[in-house]
Amino acid sequence: MNDRRIRHIAIVGGGTAGWMCAAALANALKGNCRITLVESDDIGVIGVGEATIPPIKLFNQTLGLDENDVLAHTQGTFKLGIEFVDWAEKGQRYFHPFGKFGADFDAVPLYHYWLQARANGDKTSLDDYAMAWAMARDGKFTPPTHDPKLVQSTYDYAYQFDAILYGKYLRGYAEQRGVTRIEGRVIDVNLNNETGFIENIVLENGPKIAADLFIDCSGFRGILIEDALKTGYENWSKWLPCDRAVAVACAPAGDFTPYTQATAREAGWQWRIPLQQRIGNGYVYSSSHISDDAAATMLLWNLDAAPLADPRHLRFSAGRRKKFWNKNCIAIGLSSGFLEPLESTSIHLIQSAVTRLLALFPNRDFDPLAAKEYNRITGAEYEATRDFIILHYKATGRRDSELWRQTAAMEIPDKLRHKIDHFRSGGRIVASDFELFQNSSWLAVMIGQHIWPDYYAPLADLRDVDGAKMLGGLRRVMAEAVSVMPGHTDYINRYCPAVTRQ
Image (cartoon, rainbow, N blue to C red):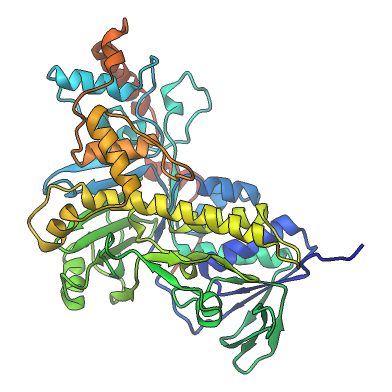
């Protein structure tokens, strides 16, 4: 039988994307395929902290990594969700929790009973029914229980860590499993004259590297997927006008909050990601609405403590490659596309891409159907995630600056319009395929940004349930559970204090 197995994989680019790919492939292939990663220390990265979403835990568990060890080596903290400040209007806040709102006690989803109570004059916030927020508000953390009868099972969590240190951690893991790292800068890519496939890459002052499968983790430039293969880019700036960011870390200030914060500013939004030894900060903004200097000044004005370095600037265009898998090249990370980090999706999109690659892993014949399916699913995931981010811009009541007036008035994708219309009509959350964010996430943002349903589920009025009484009991049980939990900082100091000093 003719052996058509992939014998050599070359990954171009390190960082979080490259080393996540290398670690996952090394773990899955068990030394049966040579893996080479090429990166250059001369190419800088912006490392001011990275927030994640709950599926990152599965990625680490698949690799067999110990959670506390990862956080200790990446200055990590725990994340229960994201607090959004000034998005619906100035002075208003809401929380996007990880997990569910409360515990369903009837066939009707809990939030419809909350809407029913609100229609009867109850002023309690929806946030008050999320265990993740009850804990975050009080600065508490402990892992959830697996007992579904307990309210302590209704929340989830992710991490806030130094992405550069995470990449280094995974590098050690990958190299221990046979991945070869080569220092160098790619200066040329040679294609096969007949097939158009990549035959080899040429390094500056170094060798040519031939491989069967190439993975492009080279960042925005896309050395392989774009410079060599001319794949093309689908620009989404008409919906996501922010095209620049300025980032800086500052000294820590008090306890580590177990959540990320996103604060709307005049021309964009500012992130705050608390790590153990510093706070990562950045201002994502539209260059059409504020200058680079003014954006940096705004960021520095709104830090918790003194900056630890000079601000660093980044330019980008929201969008995606027209193909993620082209010929014998797969783009993963920033080389595949970019969505601003408003909902902390960057690392997850790397994770899902690697998982999808393993599910559709090719041989040297490179079945075009596998590539087509990979591109279909990845494109749908990008678009669904894009729509969730667009929702934050569209559903704003702010009219105090040109950016917010522009986004409030813009036309939006049909699928997003469909979702909003259903929710505004009767509080229905409709889903489509390949959605990363589930119903509770859409509920948090739509209610948080004042998309109010015209009515709640009619079934709630036909059930023999005292919704108000059940909601009150749920709040009491949640408060009791949170009161005995350890503080977030105390938990970290006990189980995963940072071992890396910078």
